[in-house]
Image 1: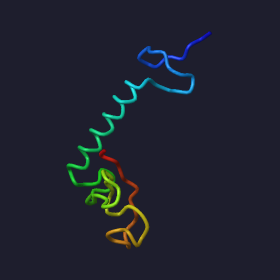
Image 2: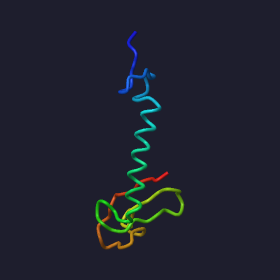
Image 3: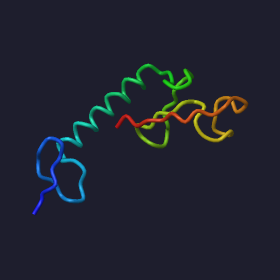
Image 4: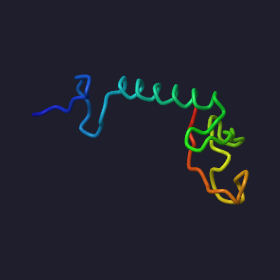
Length: 86
């Protein structure tokens, strides 16, 4: 019987795509990148300010993210950038 293996060589379930250790490493890389972006305070896509969501802990979004009633300047085009720092 053929066993499924992660890219690191560990045996994994047939429903998984990677082992827990590789998942945690990839997740930590994404979190470090998101924290670095949040620390700059500027959106990497459009250059506007980033806003920290008051309702979802760790959610950072461009001030032009969302519908017209939620954007800083509804007359300008929306920006889709958002990330999670937790």
